[in-house]
Image 1 (cartoon, one colour):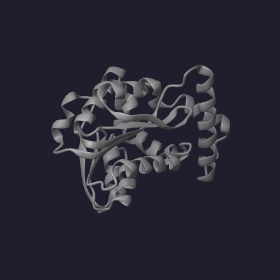
Image 2: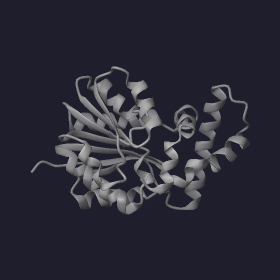
Image 3: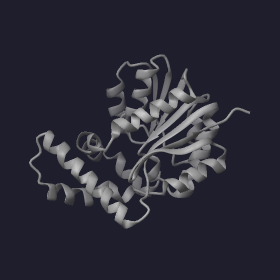
Length: 242
């Protein structure tokens, strides 16, 4: 993991994100719906999947609800996140929760077998671009032929004006979400908190166009950005059969 990304190993930041930020992500339900639609199209009978950088496991849990007999592996380098994943998953499905840092090239040694689906949510953007490309190749090697990789991700805006529009949208959603949950913070206070948040230093954003190009170069097919709302993108591709 890039050094700045280690802020996510702090329990206080994890709890702030899970309780006060994630619920405000614009169109989060639509992102998961697109992910599941792509999975149904590529892998109608999912037997195994990997949720990489799983956080509290929200993406993998959505897969389990659609494929309750699938075997799920949940990987994160943050023990507080994995604790939240264990709590969310409970005894739902056949799952393995693994503490591993996929920022290190040997992380795949902790895994056994291949996967029908690999998903990742708002995680890989903490890695330097060179490491992102390596991770995408490592994921490709973990997929069965015909397997699908989907990244629900924070990507770079094309210019500062678009970035500003996105940040205004996110602050609006944060303010509304926090008001609905009893917060007395003004929008201006929410705005200041958003701009000075401690995890901001961990973001290493790359344009989605560049990342799709990397996937194609590795060998993924059907690569596309399937959904994009400013800096939030759902993209990926399929490992084709020989």
